[in-house]
Image 1 (tube, one colour):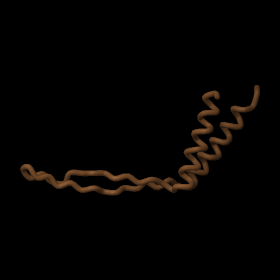
Image 2 (cartoon, rainbow, N blue to C red):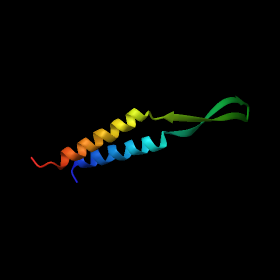
Image 3 (tube, helix red, strand yellow):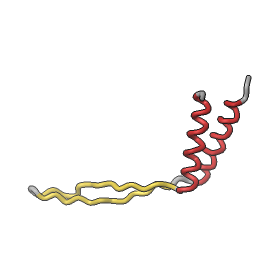
Image 4 (cartoon, rainbow, N blue to C red):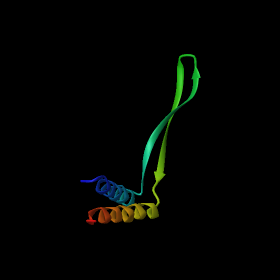
Length: 73
């Protein structure tokens, strides 16, 4: 596999993952206060949404790169 084919496959996989999942979430832990040996920490759940137009664009570009890399000059 050439570099362009690998790039095309990666874009396709990332585009499909973004399209079907719609985003991802993660937990962030922050320290709110320290009073002597006591420490107050808070866990916040953050989410990142992946726009569908970005996922569809990644799928289209990945497919285009894959098709163009398979053409023989």
